[in-house]
Length: 187
Image (cartoon, rainbow, N blue to C red; front, side, top):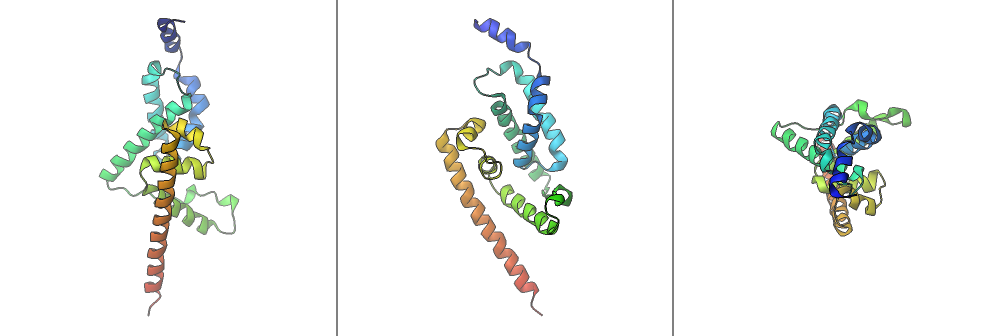
């Protein structure tokens, strides 16, 4: 087909089948990128509004998920930037924890999830994306490179930096908690 026919064929494609096939992926991606639960519906809508507006520009050089993930990263990044201007602090709400999976320690699970969110929130979005995809979702680095539209070496570098940042922030938070417990335990 010539370029005119290809473009005309893309213009006939609607966002609806893409939405149905990728909604869960976009939702999960935004959640992993740090969008608070209360903002997820709006953020997902923002991703698909942008995708709808730019659908005719999508050339099919990558998977649709890759294209949508790039949009999701920008939406999540914009949300974080706007939240910092409003001086919001994102906290994992207690109801976000799946307590049915571990009935012996729901409090510990909530605390662990809150700690994870605090650590991830301290990371730049590019590192958080790679770290979350690899360490939490188990996505191979080759696929992450495609999703974030970056060379494989960049993915490995971001993962290394994210792991270092994770360890450093975890040690910092543990030290703060130990200090608070120690000071709080004095008469």
